[in-house]
Length: 98
Image 1 (tube, rainbow, N blue to C red):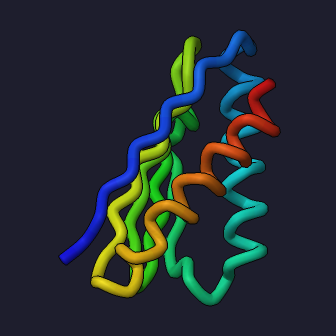
Image 2 (image 1 turned 90 degrees about the vertical axis):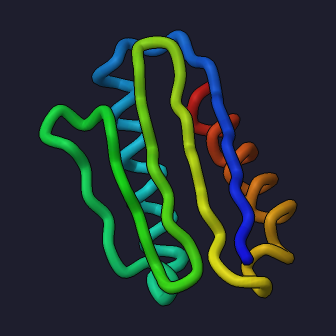
Image 3 (image 1 turned 90 degrees about the horizontal axis):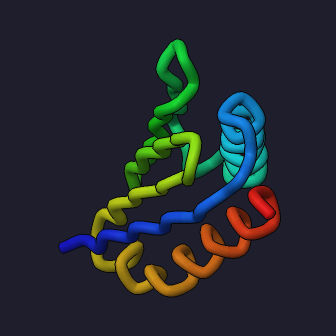
């Protein structure tokens, strides 16, 4: 059993700035939640990143118009936190992309 989350945040930033902010957001999350994240990777152009851990996997996609975060929560325990996780993602994107 798992849960899926999709958050899309529109932005008016140049693509390079959006990529920089997206990477910084994931770096901060990794630093803050180091016990939960085992792997982070970005494509060479920086427009797509992945993060994974024991209880989740996530894909970050950055375009000139928006950033999309898709998260799959794994297991019942993680699924119970879906609302909190989604709210935190939305608040973080709102802060970095406004």
